[in-house]
Image 1 (cartoon, rainbow, N blue to C red):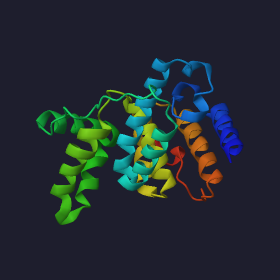
Image 2: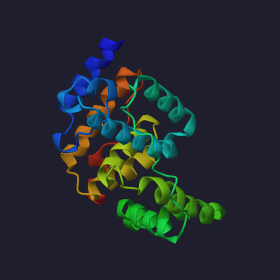
Image 3: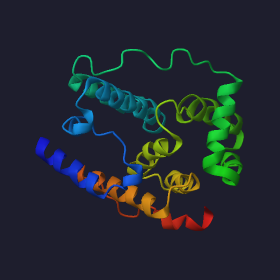
Length: 214
């Protein structure tokens, strides 16, 4: 199993767009020269933590808790960052403003029509999206940038088979300035992981399907 995972990571590394490559394959990357010091590994650990802090809003907390426990088991003493990053955050107008600005960059004029489909539930779920999902988590660029956050979001949508949200975030990634070629390269990498895990990728939307809307 370990050799299969290593081969998968090597294949992904070979095809993933160089302009978007991130430090998110912990055990594999620990073998690379870029992560041989404690400070380098701490940075890697912090980035992985931010991935998990964001992805729980997309796939649910139980799966993420399992991933946190798995990561903690393989981190050597001193390689993690014990200080928290969220304890001082307050849910206030500034957080809602940041979330609104972030979600608007992704959705633009498509945002309100989506909210309109929520019917009588619209006000509460608009607040949830702007203040909590984006405000507290997805718009926080302290560790991961806007583009890197989309590299968390797009795979989460694809692997859950969510056609609408996948198309929204493929389009949103393009709106953040990532080229069509690089977005397609990201999807090819995600498909490799999905196939390795035994999931079908048949019928997945592609960036070309939303290119006219960018």
